[in-house]
Amino acid sequence: TTSTLGELDRRYVFHPFTAAGAHERDGGPAMIVSGSGSTLTAADGTTYLDAMAGLWCVNVGYGRREIADALQSQALRLPYYHGFSSMATDQPALLAERIIRLTGDLGMSKVFFGSSGSDANDTQLKLVWHYNNLLGRREKKKVIARSRGYHGVTIASASLTGLPAMHAQFDLPLPMIRHVSPPYALWEKQPGEDDAAFVARLADELEQRILAEGPETVAAFIAEPVQAAGGVIPPPDGYFPAIQAVLRKYDVLLIADEVVSGFGRLGAWFGSHLLGIEPDLMTIAKGVTSAYVPLSGCVVSDRVWEVLARDGGAFQHGYTYSAHPLAAAAALANLDLVEHGGLIEQAARRGERLRAELHAAFDGHELVGEIRGIGLVAALEFVAERGERPVRFDPALAVGARITRACLEHGLITRALPAADTISFSPPFTITEAEIDTIVTVAREAVDQVADELAR
Ligand code: PLP
Image 1 (cartoon, rainbow, N blue to C red):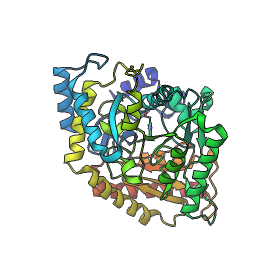
Image 2 (image 1 turned 90 degrees about the vertical axis):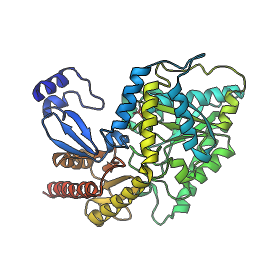
Image 3 (image 1 turned 135 degrees about the horizontal axis):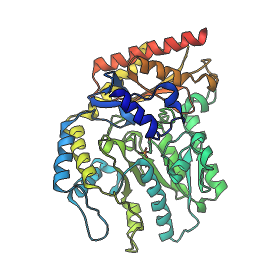
Image 4 (image 1 turned 60 degrees about the horizontal axis):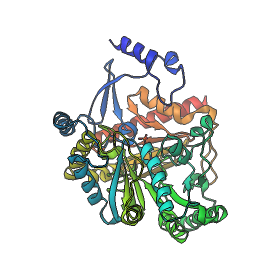
């Protein structure tokens, strides 16, 4: 029964990112038991419209038979074998070719597979260190990330993540990791500063940081094309070309973390295509399988591979589940749906509608400091005072979390992003126009409800 399931969950499951005892106090989480399209159903029969596609990942929507069938036939034919040394399986070979083809003119040549975005970013650091060791540059090991970036939770990837809450319990970041400012116009742009001046200032900050560290010690810079979990922060025009010019000057590799942006979320195959990024390494996960099963990868450029292959030695790294054939089979079926179903164009169109409706519903709203979005990802940021010098809410008011909770009470799943009063929307690419109308209507009711509570 529903209450037995809830009891088992409360007793035995150690939930990620969940306050100890929270479920005892609030009666337990919604127990999701099925999904179809953009709708989830809980054990007690409640349905939810999932405006977050899980965690920015179920891009083709729930319940796609094509992926289930691919998983079943692969599980019966060959559920597992590894790809270490003299062995290989067929699905990862087909998938790697597909991924390299989809990266188009980005100059990519090889895929190293893992299971999560976090492990893939860990692997990226090892790749970068190995690369510099092969070049005889043993001092060139530091990696620069950005505040508010999200790159995962392993010891290295949590270090790259630029959210203090992810560091405090563990004495992170690791000593070779640095952070610079994100292109977060609402809070980082100075009054009167235009985009070009803002970009120039951020590029200069990066250059000064590299010079202060010593360019001979800085190996790589990692960035999401659009910071997702840190607040949905699209960069201003010209940001990546300016950043890249600095990186090239000091021979620093660029890792594009495409875990959210890859495979269509921004209305293009990769964020790198859309934003003029020329990555040396790309991290992929989430949308490669639409999260039907875990799969991640480090996509390695020709120029990096050329160095890695130079001494003919092995990269001393690999997971039991690297190049898992079931995951690769699911990915191929998923990419068929995205590619042959026109889902990237659809994501772009639905994203335009979502942004237009958010503007219609929230422009000028007393609580809304900014409406941001690109492709099919969008956010509302709430502020205590609007204007050229906005003022944040007292974090104790937990405004973003309250609005997300109010949405949930009305059957809508959104996400309150950490350390900011921002809620995000990142629905499946298959979301219908009517469902977008519902997202915006319910979000408006929830925001008004919390505005009323705050005014009391
Ligand atoms: N990189 C980015 C940009 C992400 O958004 C995430 C997760 O949200 C990760 C890496 C970490 O991926 P995972 O949770 O699969 O370890």
